[in-house]
Amino acid sequence: MKYEVIVMGASSGGLNAIRSVLTSLSENFSIPIVLVQHVSPRSDGQWIRSLDIIAGLNVKEADEKETIEKGNIYVAPPNYHLLIETNRTFSLTIDSRVNFARPSIDVLFESAADVYRDKMVGIIFTGANSDGAIGLKRIKELGGTTIVQDPNSAESPYMPEAALSLMPADYILTLEKIAELLNKFDKDN
Image (cartoon, rainbow, N blue to C red):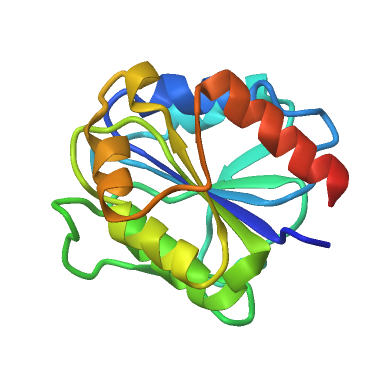
């Protein structure tokens, strides 16, 4: 098995980007996905429930100490940082905001990189800040595969551009091509 987890991060415009990619994954997609979408701390999670209905895969908020299982899509709860522990369970914290955000993409990506190293994929989608750039760089440094949404196709190109300013990504792709690549990774896994 090449890949054990995929982490994704998105901000402004991210709900449309995430919806586009997740609804294009094969119905038997098995690599677990963990994602941070910047949302209001008071979000009621309706977007997660609607994504669960249309994605064809199990989409849920990550719970404290929950074990990461194949075929699931885990979402960081609003107002919590989401980390991955060495025993491949989740940890939730209310530590200070990072890049003005909680949950922070960098926090998730850096903890995942330390655990999974070359057996993971990190993806940065659209957004209007630089959260995730340092985390994606850490994934690359530890041998993981990095994907950045093509800034020209992003609703808000700043976040993809911030990531690309720190490191060359393995792939710079449109949403459609990201979904195709993830399906290929899963099929080859």
